[in-house]
Length: 308
Image 1 (cartoon, helix red, strand yellow):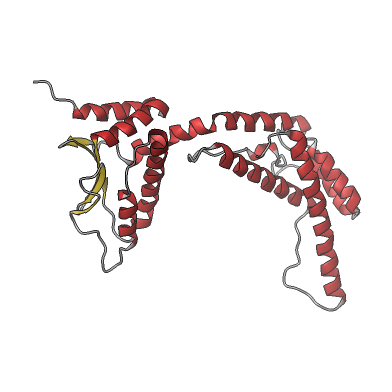
Image 2 (cartoon, rainbow, N blue to C red; image 1 turned 60 degrees about the vertical axis):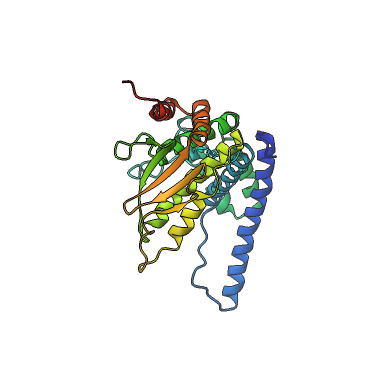
């Protein structure tokens, strides 16, 4: 499990810093060996030590966020993200003179003073000094802020993920659409989307996977199995070609089951029986925001007998 602990993160970065500095010197030695033997490669440029340090921090924190997401998102689309303001160098307007120095208090991340120390260490050519200066530079990061930010996100990540899932269901099923208003007919809730041809299919397939992933989460929480209608439609779209642009009208997938899809010339209908919709409604009511809850409740009312 990935821990959120400043000391442990610094220890990992200390090791990475040594590796980066060693790799830089090996690179320079290799280029020098080539050149001594009359070999010149097309590109032997190497970024500055300050740039490598910044990229190292970005890679480290991106990896930390990925690990935490995998451990705490509970299969939802929520993700841990850390602002690069914490670990990038403060920028300065290009019109300023070169001797302008940014106050260390002006930035959450690394100041220009820290960058200058790193550049001086690079100019010295001393690997030990470079390692020491980069390790010292780590102390200028707002570690308390980084810890608090990551821990706060992790604590609410799954809940935030379920909220996103509820919103995805409402949005991609057009539950609150003016153009494709939901209907209830013959014991089924019907949600409509536009049809697509072969050239538009890949975009629609992305939306299908979002619906499918959302329904998988609902299944995990409710135990209700929605079947494989979406996968069937996905594959049918995947098989479209310029000579076979559209799915034939009235093609159906899992028709008559708890959840089926019927394709028409200009639209696709996602048809849920009452039990299937009730599973979705319960999930949205539990995890959705006010807008999603309002949409699902308004949809549920479609099944109620109209007043005389």
